[in-house]
Amino acid sequence: MSVFEELQRRGYIKQMTHEEEIRDLLENDRVTFYIGFDPTADSLHVGHFIALMFMAHMQRAGHRPIALLGGGTAMIGDPSGKTDMRSMMTKETIAANAASIKKQMEKFIDFSDDRAILANNADWLLNLNYVDFLRDVGVHFSVNNMLRAESIKLRLEKGLSFLEFNYMLMQGYDFLYLNQNYGCTMQLGGDDQWSNMLAGADLIRRKERKSAYAMTCALLTNSQGQKMGKTVNGALWLDAEKTSVYDFYQYWRNVDDADVFKCLRLLTFVPVEDIDAMESAEGVNINEFKKVLAYEITKNVHGADEAEKAKGAAEALFEKGKDMTNVPTIEITAEDLEGTLLDILVKGGVFPSKAEGRRNIVQGGVTLKEMKVSDPMQKLALDDFEEDSVLVKKGKKHFYRILLNR
Image 1: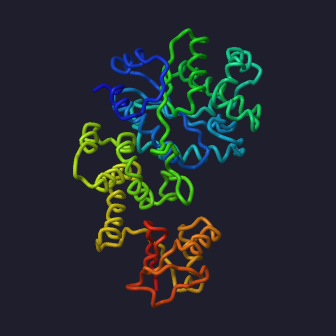
Image 2: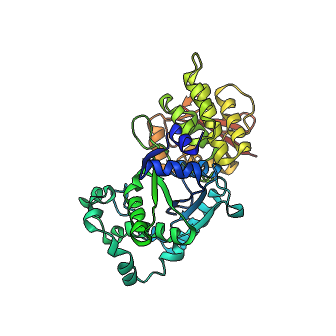
Image 3: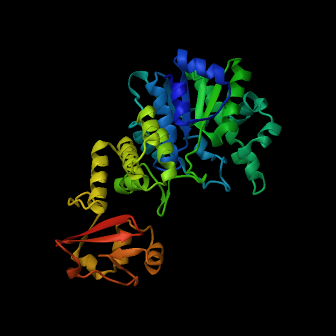
């Protein structure tokens, strides 16, 4: 099976510029392509993960990826899909974010022996002369066409700054620069980037008199069309310090039945034939496939050892296993017992704030030893602990072990 067919069967491809030419290139040539990632945080989240998988499938088929960190474009902010202007970040913050994201990318993409390139557009965008840039690049952009782009139209009613209006030119220039310096002929990305990608391909055609191609992947949405990856505490991050491995595993373990096979195709390397067989199997509990999904995605992001630990913790809690070692644990001392249970849960990262925790307690969302906690001022007592630990449940499926270090 060619990589083009693989991508189609898995459901990646949403739009493309020249289907027959792209199919022929991917089947008969070695293509250098790029995907951009603006370092607006110090970690990628699950919304970026589909792009990393898109890139990984292409690399496994022999094509060369360029992972482009947007150290320069992040200074402007992409208006695509945004209702308001992004907050401005310092150069130092953007550089620190880019360094963190680089480490995450190396888990998925092989950068050895020129198999892939890691670039940062700060290297060429931050030193541009604005007048020269307008004369060289801006002359090829039609304002009328830009105003018809979805990323621009959606913002015109609420207001679009001239700063953000420049983003399309900058992204188009990225494609041109990568074409001139690395032989990059194709851009991949999320479907919300379609207008920007077309602008870059057109710029190469005008400036270099060469063909360039664009192909988008579907955004990660559930069966109701809503973006996946949102949790009570915010985004589902790929960094274990921001989203614990256990919570990451449990997110996928608890996806809606209707989304299981779609996520298996998009977010794992399980052979597509095996996924088709799972989907057509009769008499199998869908929860068994959810376990496969949760394990495979967690393994991809955090490694097999961490995936096994998360799986073991889930089995201990939900399938009457005995080893509680890998259940998310909050370690406390006797001094912490002087504060409230709410203080302990906030300190342990169960809730992002006291206000959020208090609201959950009042609404009956916190359980201690199978009893609902109703008072935000409730404290833990020594006799609550069995073998120095006690289980607390948030909602229906999130368990935490509070471990008392005496």
